[in-house]
Each structure stands twice: as C-alpha cells, then as structure tokens.
Image 1 (cartoon, rainbow, N blue to C red):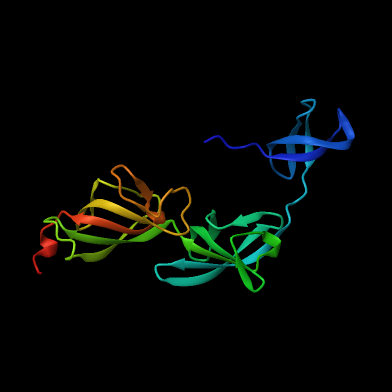
Image 2: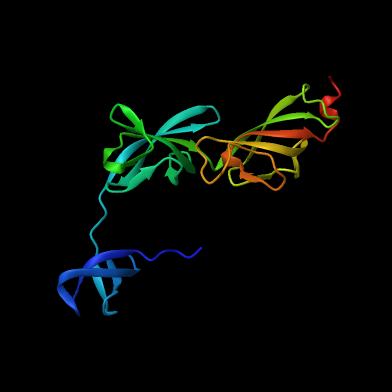
Length: 215
C-alpha cells in the first residue's frame, strides 16, 4: 500500500511569501524538508508541533478490562471501528474503538478534544468461540470451545481448520457488531471469509472423532 504524502499549509519563499500554499512534506522532523505544490520550490521549514491531549482508554480483552492512556491530536476525528496502536506498560497492542464516551453519553464519532474516554477491544490476538456438531450430522448434539489466534487470521466458510487439538470445517460465521465491511451479520456461503478479530462465533462440523468418544 502506498503511503499518502502529508500536506500542510505554509508560506512559500519563492512564489507566495505572504499567503500560505499547500506543501508536501518530503522529510519530517524539526527542520522539515517541504515542497510547494504551486511552484515546486523545495525548502526547509520548522513545523509547528501537533497539539495532543491524553485520553483515557478502556481495553476489553478476554473477558477482562484495564485502563491506559493515549495522546491524541486535538482535532483528530475518532470513530467506532477504527483501530490504533496503544502503548501500555506491559506491551504495545492493537485495539479497535467500540464506543466513545462524550459527557454523559456514548457516541460513534467525535472530535478528540470532546472525548472523555475511548472504549476499545484488543484485536491483535483474540479468542474465537466455536460451536461444533458431530460430522455424522446431528445438530442437536453440539459442543463449544474457544480458539486463541492472531486477529488477522482468516476463517473461510467451507474450509477445514486444524488448530491445536481441534479439526473442524467452517459452516457459518457470525460477525461482530463492531466489524465493518461485511454485508451480513452471518455468512454461510462457501468462500465467505472473516478475520478472527471480526468473528463473534464460528459454526462448524467437527472433523475429529475423539472429541465425541466420551458422549
């Protein structure tokens, strides 16, 4: 994926010393190298530091939650479904925004300076719940188990998985409420795929026999 060049308004000493024009940042830093998009002149400028504020972040992970803080630019717009890296004393983790606390209510989108608390869910490594029925076909005899997988691990309807001691074929995927980019809440056509961090529950046909030997 090609990164987008940062653009900022600055006065250009060559073509517009009194009025700001759009500049591309070629090399960031204290003395940044910038290029005027009007005339192409390249020059050095000291860029103003972006103003940030610390915001409380609540992270939900494996049924538990803990608090941290993130420094967010004042004017940045935050929205549910967005993901960002959060630095905690224990680790740097990827989290997804599930809601934004603004005043006494919750919102799906808000400017950072208005947000009191960012509610999130850890999505770097996740637990996926599976409901499996025996491969003989009885759907009224099921068992449930959880899988620990990376958040970007892909589950595909119709494909057989071997994870740890479990072997099963995915028959349906229930998608989480905070997932974006999916047309339906449940996917059950062969080839439908969902990242583990977006899975609320997998429905599967158990391909192992030992799992049912005790029944």
